[in-house]
Image (cartoon, rainbow, N blue to C red; front, side, top):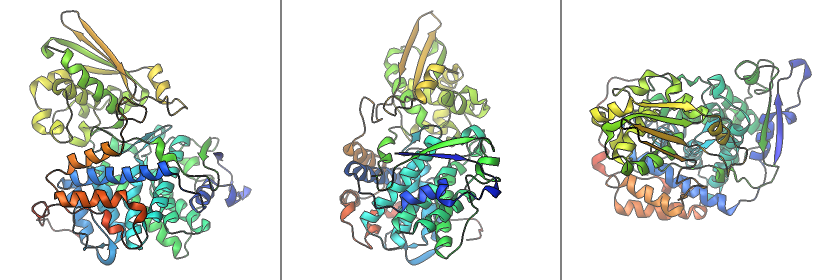
Length: 501
């Protein structure tokens, strides 16, 4: 690996593009690195994972909205939309918009956490859509996805966005643009310009994940992917970008992040070194913010130890800075304690999540979030008794430089009215690569079958699983086979209000 020092330079310094982070990214995106077998297999796992959650969210309102917008942009040789017959094609940027929203809606696909956080599988919808419209083959798609993961994971390691209240899609725009550049075998110069353009247009604030969280949380990465596609198209037509986008005196670092005196160090693979960052990422067994994964596992295991929930006096969760301040009581969001809050808010409330998982001894991507479930009196009572605390030990574990030691869990202490106490901790989610039951190919397939059960035909399920596992064999023009059609009864025309599209 190489480490790229990134800092601000005055315009008069005339920083060479070869010394800029965007160029370094473009270089690895345009190199001739061999494929790592394990990384290729993980690409297949994540395509299965994305398809699972996208189909499971097919009927949800934000997904329906995004899909209806995309359906208004048909294209004879375009890209497919999850759930829709594969013979129908659409403009790739709109297919990416619809599919990206579907993938993100349930907060149920993969994650990577370091200096910042991310959902690297958000790279797949835009790269796949361009691959379909451009008639690429399976091997090219694999290379593009590996670049997307490589860039996003390493940006997340080196540059923290959330401390400046910037949404993490600012790392997704550049990574998706770089991945598309690899997919299409673009020149380093073109990818360099596309990365800069994509970053410039995808900087937004974290208000999308604060307070009353709206459906924009699902739309945000889809929007970044769509903008990345458009950025690549523009540079393929000969257009340039604001430059240097990271290091300029009026750049992202200078006036959005840590300022003119800041220095960042971003790791990147050496030229022609296999791209394996995807192997550092992890998917979700439960539909909730990743920091809740280990805590859901822990709460489920504690369920059998609590005989009388009315005897619970209070519950303290000692955890990392991020968990406490983003999904815990440290966020100071009253909406996180409100039974009438949106699903998007509840899946970012560890207090609600713990209350339900403790009571039910299980977790379900739909049933655990229904209005009826959130308004259950015993749940509300338990929910209000939960408080989180930042613990430096857990924060240090969260940021451990060794990814095999990095932990996103916490310690739950339950105090009862009779004076008894139950205290348990779990460092790593069961499904994490370093957990008790790491997800393997069969787990991804089981997740797919569970989430798509009843929504697609069994023949369609078998066909997709066969095609995706033979991804490297798919020829040019065959990537539409990675799409999935839902049963006709679920794909009815939606009566809509007057709209633009």
